[in-house]
Image (cartoon, rainbow, N blue to C red; front, side):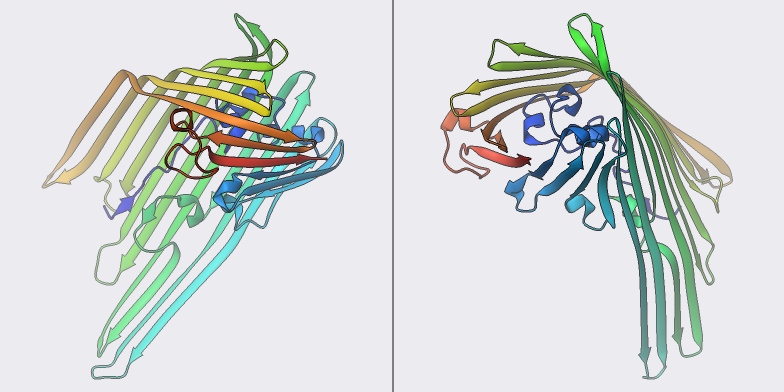
Length: 406
């Protein structure tokens, strides 16, 4: 089988949005803070509550931005950043007071021709042509029904842009090449096609269960397909295919509780699951095939956040704890060995693996309609501040967001 390298193609995270610094310092889940402006990215209908200009992670020098304006029920917004730099458009729009959409589109084509002509003896000529296109459509539709908030999402992409960290030999799309030296000629042609589809669903609603009063659910179905065919004069046709699908879910019970008049406590506990199947096969040689099945059940996922007023702002402390409750992976490689077809099985399972723990602290400042949120360097609590933004020696801030409402 020809070289197909797949690295992290299906990296599914339950927290699918880049959280602001306030969210990061309050447990890391947008869903647990329904009053925060970042909810416009999870449930787009929340744009009806805001007129805002947001700059996220300004300390990077290249912040993401979002702006929302208009009347309630007819809001419009724009957003973007490094991840959307090549998009045609990125918009929010509300159709009425309970329904809105978030949409983006990337559309691009590429054509590269290279030709060389060496008039020495023997005459040598070469020509190569590679063309491909990128298409990436992302839609998130949100609607509120009473106290229940719903969102559905769709992403469809076609082209090498969806590969992220994957490499398929040296070309994408359609490829043609020819080489001539004297009376000797050779040629090569190929095509590589990449398709990606993801469907998602989100729900948040009041639900009294034990110590919790809210329920959040996220579910995703993902399909990825990569097919490559390469034909060279005098060589066997190489025809490879990588096919992967997965289904995942995340359930979170949470509560937001006011403590006295100056503090807010949020806490949640959740569980997650993901099942996937991957197949890599050489269609020109049916005896060469790899199949991988995996299941991962996670939990308990602990989320905890505290925000308290102080004289000159707000202090925040957040904790995230994750664990894989059960992991199962079954891989089978089938290949030809002489006159025989051999199978190699690799089975792995475990309980209580891949545990992780994170503590994040933050600080918020407000002046009239202007709000600044910082993620603090944890070393600050030991060695004190030295500079506002730096990554060494107990510095005060690591990242900052700016929000202006009007």
